[in-house]
Amino acid sequence: YALAYNLSRVTSYAMAGALAGLLGRTLLHAVDVKPLSIAFRVVAGLIMLATITLLAVIGVGSYLFHTHATRWAELADVLPILAFILTYVFAASRDFLGLRPWVAGVAVLAFFPYAAATVPLFAMIPGLGSSAGYAPVPVLILFYAWLLRHRAPATARGLTTGACILVVSLTFRTLDGPLCGALPFGTHFLWHVLNSLMLGWMIEVHARHIRGQGLAGPGRMGETEAGRGQHP
Image (tube, rainbow, N blue to C red; front, side, top):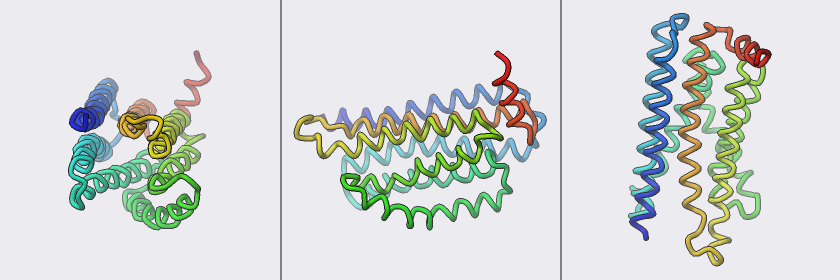
């Protein structure tokens, strides 16, 4: 059972990474992105490659921790997740909000005091337990969605969808302990399945945004999406 459970966990992350990579590559090659600078395209491609790679590494790290449960395995589980979050914060700040790379870097650094301030607050919620460490992430995603609600509504909707999937995923993670007596197989596996789906979807949201910028040209993302919403 343990072997099958861990293999299914790794498979779910790997499949999500492969699907995200395939969709992202298809979208980027399906459109002429000449309005974007070469440097912008190169960095966006590197970010996408990094997030896809990290998604697969997260699956391996999760397998190692749930199999060995040692300190090094715990780090192998947690650090790739943190790396994915920080990489996506940079991508969202640079590519979604249009901030300069150094400002996006500051946004990445700001994640640490943000997490330090909010995790203790979420830890005060009864029953949330260790899931409090992940709770600030959907809030942050929704904040970016709110900032993009006018300039890039389709991207904002994609981020909102990702945040909702993560909330459901965290719910299953939180309920695993209380329901263990009634459900011997627990609900923790749904946390991994939905989490892999959410991470793959977030990569897809980034790819679609870059595609939209290629169609509209820099600074016209919101206009294009608004126009699409007015015509059937």
